[in-house]
Length: 520
Image (tube, rainbow, N blue to C red; front, top):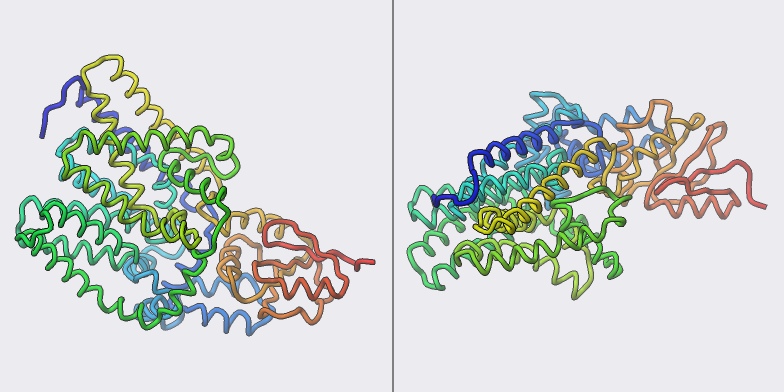
């Protein structure tokens, strides 16, 4: 490893370790405080061995239901086995390969199905991110300083801390992206059969974690063939054999995805919905900035200048890395960034859509950003000119402080932008729990089922449910206390009430209250 000049690495490493400990503390703080949202409720449904068809046939067949009954679909299905979890994903949600869900099922068997227990597996995976990142940085940069700088930035990165507490596979996906990338670089450097085999299994693990790992594999392939000057060298052949083995191992799920492709299209179809250009651009800006800074939905618009400054810093870091790093270094990072982002962005621009502004799809890009910024800061804080060194030390300090402040705020909140369509569920539950003998009327479809399961963790037993298919409500329950219409696809129910001259008042997102009396 190269020697470090103009920087006391011993004290810097101690500081980085302290920052790492702070990041770990954020990951284990208030694990169960944020709402267990729509997607996480689906996680519990899948690992329990249920399908959404089971839920619809059970919950909607009962018509009048209870919160306790909904919770049965968040607990293990009597007699269910591991194959039921895999089957549930294969036939209804094949965009999510089974590895994380299989591991989580075993985890829940051991530690219980509380929100804390379920989310703790993701936290465990988030701890594995650090050694994998360290390994990747040593293979890529051959610098302890850059490796520790990258760890410090990721430790208090708001987006990484948020997803570390999410009962989904994205912390594991981060591990597999870093692990497979580090294994690839080591295999290229040493060109030994056993390391190529390690790479093959690491890539297969990534495939079985999230379907967008295919773009990571494309990035790896582009990098290898550019480095090998598009020749079938021994390394190129070894790469082809390794990636071929990975695809072979993933073939069972590929066949399942093909067999259930119509369901795959339906579950991902929402990403084709176009957004206005100003909203799309703002989401892009915020997503990039959330790598370092995130004050939440309410405060983000007030700090757009900060996000523009962060964008400028990232663009400069990319330029600096390309200008000063060896070809094999900057090419790997830029290839990973471009090959995993452009296939999402270009269709959005040409045909419309929102694939490229979904944060959970962007982890390869997030990691690329952190690598170039870590390289930039490490080089700048160790340069010879004192004034420039002090300025960049201040910038590095501000980035770390921005992450710490962001994580402090989000750790105390019961909801955050990451909860998306369930963002308002804590408010909805609080309002319903205060209502007089409340009855919720909701319909089957859209986002309603996942949000109802999410609400079942927050609502008191007194709250009753009337679940109907997407159809007009034929009668108003008598002596029901306060009546609410809840959900996204409830237009037929609301229209039927309006036609009968009933008053409806929008209380919160997706929540309408039926007012006593009729309109004149």
